[in-house]
Length: 418
Ligand SMILES: Cc1ncc(COP(=O)(O)O)c(C=O)c1O
Image 1 (cartoon, rainbow, N blue to C red):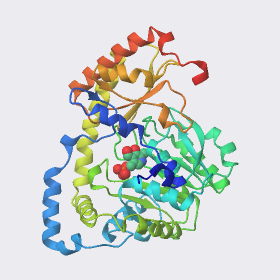
Image 2 (image 1 turned 30 degrees about the vertical axis):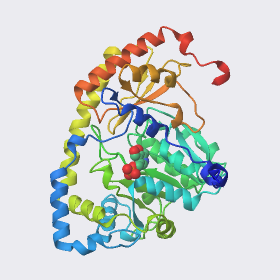
Image 3 (image 1 turned 60 degrees about the vertical axis):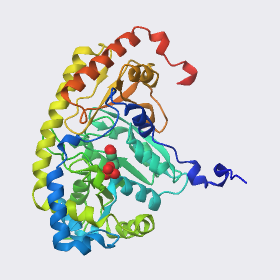
Image 4 (image 1 turned 45 degrees about the horizontal axis):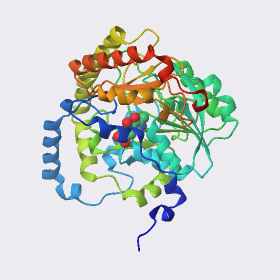
């Protein structure tokens, strides 16, 4: 007898959905489509030779260790390196404050697993990182959205949300995915002050920090929280939990990230990770450590920052030339993405089939909002296409926008559907 599997799935599984982006990427994998839809680093920049040499060195010098089971909390030298990086900016952490995760996506999932009961509230920026919502939907999160502008989360709107006792506030301070905007210094300070006042936990997700094209680094929230709390010399016990990753600065395929938090949180996350995957692949952790130790990270970041800055500039220039006047977009100072706002009421998702038919793809903005609105936005990635592809793809998109915006009635969202 055939099973009705949908009846067998747990309630948790019913809440799981496929990422709109992953589904979209399948369509855009056709070779003739110029895709600005994914969030992929430039493959031509991957440090393949250095990774191969490092792998050989590791397997020659400590082969068995690299192929054996390892500790759940991670390869200790790498934990120490992550801690040292933060300690250099005044965050009083040691290796014990660090859990190595299978990408920072796993950190987000584990944080959901240990913090969220069904119905718990989470404060997110609007728009926010889609796969965080996906992770937390499974645990039954409900969302409170903070509006954002060119300076990131509008902290002036945060207070009433904090009064609703959210389990945590999720913030992407640098070159946010999807909008590309960066939280200003004043708002960082305000966010940490408000979180302290309301005893709120903040999850700082920071995959793009090192991909800064111009301007000065701004303090991490965890740095500000450290300055605020604890006697000099005491260990980190702040309310900011920090997630970072080597995906965007070395390789996403290695799946190595980290989470930094007070001991008690790391201990609980480690228990949660044990049942998820025992530990992150040892060889990959050792590779990442070898590469950061050898100075590859700094050299490689310098190369990709130049490459992505140039690609961003080509995209901004092409947009200025070919997008209709009523379209607005962000000017990211780093990262991989920028965010386009079409005139109010225009549905970006409705434009996508026309765009794909014309050989260019983007991600409509709706799914980046837990509430699904507004629909007149879209995300463009600039790291994964050549200058020629960017010029051509943006010209195609500009043509589609130009033609579509002159027929507003065809694309306008019926009031009932907004
Ligand atoms: C904001 C944000 N957080 C987390 C991740 C997950 O990255 P990874 O699991 O590859 O470290 C991504 C990837 O795109 C991201 O944009």
